[in-house]
Image (cartoon, rainbow, N blue to C red; front, side, top):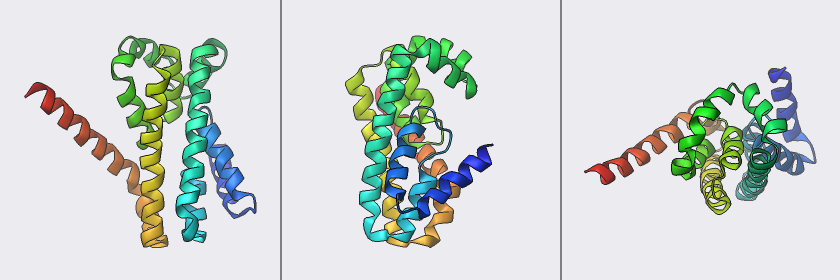
Length: 192
């Protein structure tokens, strides 16, 4: 099922409505959809590199708006919608344990989930469920998703199709390492 959904999403990149499809995929991916918008964004940018940053902007705005939907699912619809989504991703039990400490590190959680392969939708729902400050959530989402989508857009704009394999295979790892180094730096400053 996931493979068919992936293939269908990828086929949208060749549609004349690709930009609208990207906005819809980025929006729903931030709250419930399992396929990341990158698989649509990457071929769109390779096909039209001059539009790379406009495509990334659409992806960013739709993703943050979808993240706000996830936040509101968590805050207002957790039992009926949020919990089943978290159960689907195997995160329901972890959510119960995590909620006590989440708000202390919530902005970091949003930042990390926004740029790494960790499902961003889980954090959007948890942010609403735990009552993370909405302005903090929005700012962290813009920073994280902006970093993710604009780095991909810049790499594709600069290097074109040859960088595609690197992005699809290793960019999540690079973002994860970047966040680990950044987080480690803050901890070192705090405790040294």
